[in-house]
Length: 296
Image 1 (cartoon, rainbow, N blue to C red):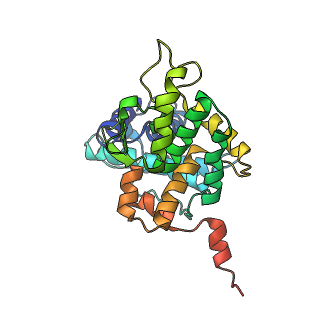
Image 2 (cartoon, rainbow, N blue to C red):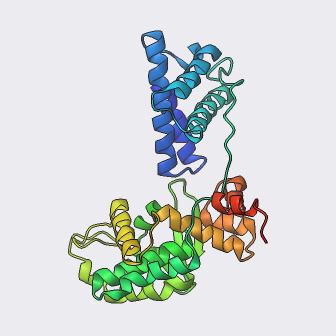
Image 3 (cartoon, rainbow, N blue to C red):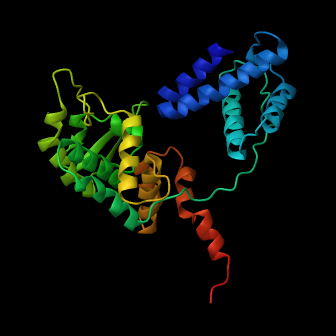
């Protein structure tokens, strides 16, 4: 079955342009499914030998697992299996689709947690309390995350020539050859300051052409971004957990809140489906609960 999973994942990457993180999630979920089927049958099983009863038994095992998966996790794993067998059916690699009657659990969607504008201003001000190349880099990094809504993987993979200074845009290239241009907006000046006055101080002879470098002159990693963000959030006195995804959610929520067209936000975020973007129209769970209580 692993051969067919590999074909499916390759299609997601080359034809649908899914991100590395999304493909990794599919790989993990389908690997778990394949292992379950092997355990049930006591050996290698071809996709055409998988029955609807086996698929349903897998779903039941997820729901009964020790500690229990969250409904959203179960829904994701079911979606991966359904997509996989739909692909095999379309490619005529199986005679019938064993996941056809599979239903996903209903998930109540609420808008992701975001930062207020005041919290974002405090976060962005934190690196400016220090001086030197690191402070300029951190300031540019946080400004870029907040002003563009880019994924952390996209930011750490940016190259110096991905910044179009003349147009005031950053060119974001994903693995599926999709390209989107995002206005730098308020990030342009801090980013220019970093490139002109700090990046060379971090660079050495072996440094890559990636835009953001760490203190050793290497490419800044995802983990490095998380540490920079955590340090800034603590300095800003923000009590809630702040991750790169929090900034991405905040970017989208504030854009829609200011009246930006939903299709435009979808394009800026690089969402394949509009339904993914529509969640930002909903109030966070706490706000929704407050709205249900009559006010004096």
